[in-house]
Image 1 (cartoon, rainbow, N blue to C red):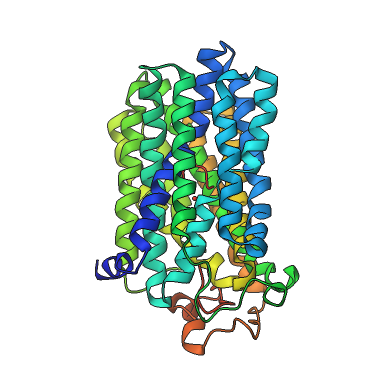
Image 2 (cartoon, rainbow, N blue to C red; image 1 turned 45 degrees about the vertical axis):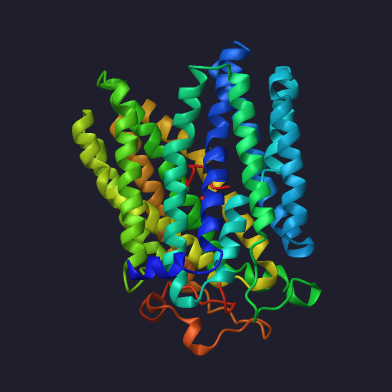
Length: 428
């Protein structure tokens, strides 16, 4: 735990993680808030609510890289204040919008979602040393798990007490407060020895978006798809057993064990390759389908839970180490888009597997998705040569390789000296 304490002792790190947790908790709850509003207030179907959530998710997936590129070019505060203003307008007007307009406005709100998670990752990259970075990203993943456990549950509880429109306002206020708080904090996005984000500091996309980065983004997509599918498989298993009311307990066990796994992994002296963690996550997910009631399902998801936060943190660490400082915003935006796409596809793909077989087939499909992404990432990493760092951002030889890089052919060689969502389970 010494490493974790060292990370929290970094100036500005504790307030950054705290404000990020507030904003991410609200963002993980936005889909539930919109669902409750459409179903309860507008008295429409769950399919109609799903369309609104899908529009929001599509906007987030498309907007992530665009906002990241704007941050690289225009600076953090400009983008944060613009997205905060957009979220303020959207959430204030949600209770007054007819369905068709709400559908379109949700897509626009997704495009301009406050980029809390990508900004937090960039700031972690700039504020920490190479030896602190893995522990810092582990804490960031733990925060994502906590936001996932708290956000949707709070919305459901509040919707039972007040109107869905008021709940939507509350979610919007929290998102705006989180974004404004980060803008006020204005954390550094580049270390002191890194180049500015001007034209000279932005390498061409083909210089950093190569096979290794595609491998990492593919694994980020795979872990998101796996986690989205596991959530649906848990619900399907307990519904078949007539124990649906225990789903919250199983999900809570999953989340708590993920938090524990993230803290333990952050304290370990040596990292592990992303493909290996994701492959293990896929392997332990498949046999969870053998559980047929809630106590056994709680036990079955412990293994997957322990590996979830470590896998998510290694994806973030790998993206940061492959990305020159001048394009780090765009790269973290691509990571968020990959995760959003994975979450959007996970549920329907696993749902089809469940419909075609049994709930156990859902766990198998989710686990196989993770294994396929891990294998793809491994093969892409082996085939690609090590990226050559730019002269403006080349690390020293002692910083360029992590321990796992030195022993694994799938390692990710950093292109920057200070490399840089549960999950949410929406990685925004």
